[in-house]
Length: 134
Image 1 (tube, rainbow, N blue to C red):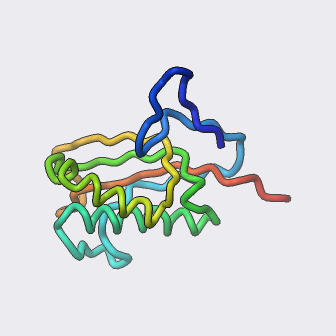
Image 2: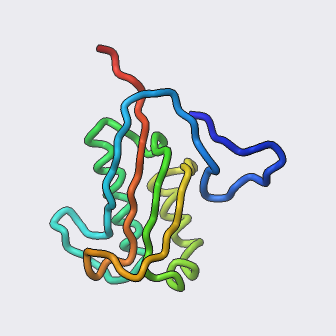
Image 3: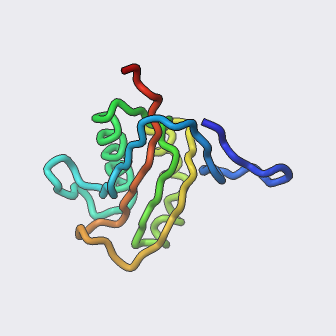
C-alpha cells in the first residue's frame, strides 16, 4: 500500500489524500450504521453510534479475512454536523482504538437524514487484501 501525498503538500491529518495498492482481493463493505448485531440502536448519540458503526465495518471485513489496516477508502455520511465537529477529538480516540494509526483515503459527507432511524452516521469502506495462494 502506497500513501499518496504530492510533493510540497502539507501532510493530511486523519486521512490520506490517496492510496495505491497492487491488485489483490477487493472487499467492499456496505454502509454500516451504529446498531448492534440485532439491528438495534443502543444510543441515539453520534459518538456511540460511530464506535459501533466502526466495529461493524471491522466485523464485516474480518469475515473476508481482512484487517483494519487493509482499508484503503472510507466514506462517512453524517446527519449531525454540529455533533460531529464537537466530538472530533473523541471520535479520533475511538478510531485509534479500533483501527489504529491507519488512515485511509476518506470522505465525510453531511446529509439531511439516513435510512435507518435514529442513525446519525453511516460508514462504508473498501479494502484490498493480499492475493492468496491458489
